[in-house]
Image (cartoon, rainbow, N blue to C red; front, side, top):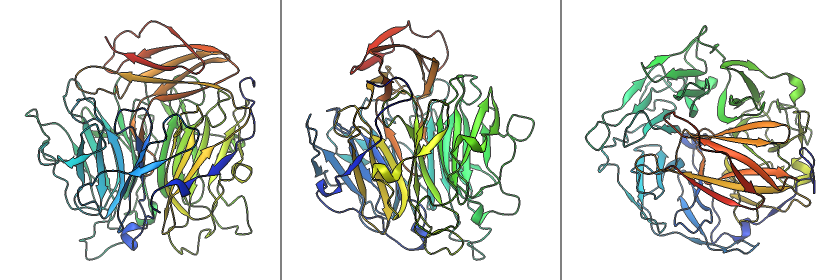
Length: 495
């Protein structure tokens, strides 16, 4: 069994043929961006289910019925509301009933779908006082503020389709939805200026007990002077230089956040057209990681196309369970953009014990060159290894089963509490292991129009157990340290 930082080489097997229908994210210029996937348990049987955005084509819900089998088997979910022109979706328990709902982003009116606990959904937007608008929505994140019964939602919008001078320099404003105090949502608060948001994430990046709103923007359509943004929620203020937040201008596509340095502060991966940018968080001060960390991934790593890459969804996860977080990046040209690589393979960057990342997608079998967009890492067959789902534009969706040999031990931890915010979004899981302490923040958002809501997966290397405790949202003292054994599926409930 490997120690931390060593394990077998990653290996995946294509199992997309197990889907009951072929799924494609399709459409014209309004679907150049988007193409998301939501992975969550929609019926309480512990098996992850998949909602895939279809663009101008149909969206699909794939219900996982494989049981404990190492193989996979899916069936189509129940009939959903009219869900065309969907760009992406995020699972979230909006009303605190313990059942996963869906926030669905669209070119047109966004929708909040209420789950029934049996993989059925209905449009509850009006019931919750949610005005879905009519924008081209391409980013989402959520948090719970104070003692609110409903989450605060942030929705990022792309180009204003009604601007007669567009699309260039015609970025739409973003929207912040806060509870009204009367059981629903107040009218959205505009977040201006908008710079064509493609990813958002609420995160307590300064470890002050409150979440700020990070927005990654597509410089391709920037108004003059556009940049990546960070908003403080109370009072609602855009941060700038001097707040630990320096202006950065990239063609931003996706956000992934994780405590790579094991110092309790979330570091951030930003995907873009060109360099993929890893920023390290030094106690609330953001700075670029050195090139030697190996996360730049700025050009294709196979083939002879030397033009810059286009990165979309990014996600951290321990692929080989060696105790170190690895990084998947979905890549793909916008369409036929001549300045960027056309055949642009996805990245699977495996973290070494020295903190550097090395490319492994070719050997792992996932270096496909379709125009990838959204993605998710999730243990679909419950064997303790993270599998991979990738949505492609105008090409079939990919599902990859992780068959890495000699992978390390693992455990999962699920968090819950009574009342609002049942899934304890904003909690921090503190993990004590060989080599130090690691932190995991429970968030909703980030990626590229793709999200998961599942137990936290922890690779353990050769360790037979580890110690952990929870810092619940809203402050206060942490739980007592508890021991979690290899193979455990722990559930921690706030008392």
